[in-house]
Amino acid sequence: MIMFTTSEENYLKAIYNLQQEEDSGVSTSSLAEILNTKAASVTEMVKKLADKKLVHYKKYYGAELTNTGMKQALTVVRKHRLWETFLVQHLGFQWDEVHEVAEQLEHIKSEQLIEAIDKLLGYPTQDPHGDPIPDKNGNLKHKNQQLLSDMEIGSTGIIVGVKDSSPTFLQYLDKEKITLGTAYKLYSKEEFDHALELEINGKPLRVSHKIASNLFVEEKS
Amino acid sequence: MIMFTTSEENYLKAIYNLQQEEDSGVSTSSLAEILNTKAASVTEMVKKLADKKLVHYKKYYGAELTNTGMKQALTVVRKHRLWETFLVQHLGFQWDEVHEVAEQLEHIKSEQLIEAIDKLLGYPTQDPHGDPIPDKNGNLKHKNQQLLSDMEIGSTGIIVGVKDSSPTFLQYLDKEKITLGTAYKLYSKEEFDHALELEINGKPLRVSHKIASNLFVEEKS
DNA sequence: ATAAAATATTAGGTTTGCCTAATAAATATA
DNA sequence: TATATTTATTAGGCAAACCTAATATTTTAT
Ligand SMILES: [Mn+2]
Ligand SMILES: [Mn+2]
Ligand SMILES: [Mn+2]
Ligand SMILES: [Mn+2]
Image 1 (spheres, rainbow over the protein chains, first blue to last red):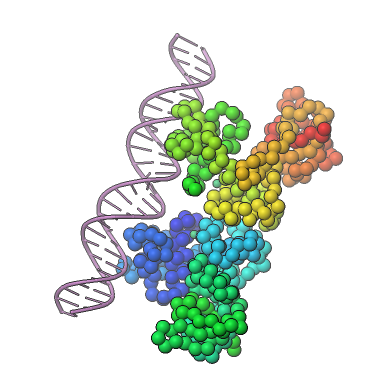
Image 2: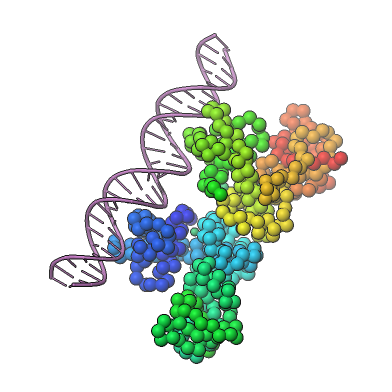
């Protein structure tokens, strides 16, 4: 059982997250931005991960997780999301307060610990932000989600996740009383700025395109 | 609010623990042994801690915590012991399984987290090994404990703590069904090897001096 | 009081993960 | 297609925590 450094784990998770969005190789600069580091440092680490067969790397064309890299990334993601869920459900944290702490807790090395947390939580399949939690074997429960900004006029359904889980965005949602499970109805879209007219919690609400493009919804059949 | 590295925190805690036993300066070699490192590394770090005014250090005469060093050490000790308690009480860990994980968890930086754990546990004053848990302000509840090996013939009371909390010792205690709170009666001591004849759980038990000198007891008044 | 033994410090390296500045390659633009 | 711009890599350093080997100091034993 090979072990990874905190830094390696952070890189693997970041590559995983970026890989979910675009399906080309993950760029050096995008990693540098997410990891709050410089491009030169990223190149160096990506080469190290490639040596360890955790990523495929071709100079100038970015990195992609190998099968083993993916497996490892998923265990870090699993730990991150289980800890977030624990913090909210058992320690009274708000959904905008969990990320930074989970960022540390995800690196604790103890299989017994994470299995016990998982059991305590009742083997949850999603975290406080609606993101799927991989099970012990790395399997994810696929959700049928779409971006609110991509929905057609007249669409109704419920909010099931957030794409951006930064405190500022989450606090905006709190202010507007938008939680996971909240029902929406899309009335209209503004030509000019792509703002959306919605009904949320029985009241009309106008949201910018930026906001709608960070909310995942599941449409009512 | 100055922050410390994991390594600095481990050193502060180790100095604290050793300082409890002997009251002269904590020696370089004792720290090296406890921290699984080499004397040269200890000297280096102790000098760094001295620069940061966390320890008093005089070359060749060991280190002692300053007031700020003590305060910091106590917050690490507090976190370590709260996590151990949490692992046992909420996650089903045995008392011999918690140390290694707590060694990692004690370094998580989040006041909100540790206060929430403290609250969840009901503000405990001792950990699974009977060691006192400092409160938020660093205050310890003093216990009236003595070593079993120091008790007089005929003494009775209860086991209240372990001095050595290594898995091997704890597993020995499990095997003999000795837990914190178990009553003892001291029948006799062997001249030759200082072994003790006890009554434990209503049954006679012979224990070596080494074992008795790692058990804290509180005598029945 | 001296010599031997035990402890501690210093000197000189190594590894990991960062950084800035210089260079190279890929992509966009004219 | 040639040039400019953007993106990525390499070169050369730095700080934190380790290490081994050489040296210094203290402690113990003669
Ligand atoms: Mn992290
Ligand atoms: Mn999350
Ligand atoms: Mn530790
Ligand atoms: Mn303990």
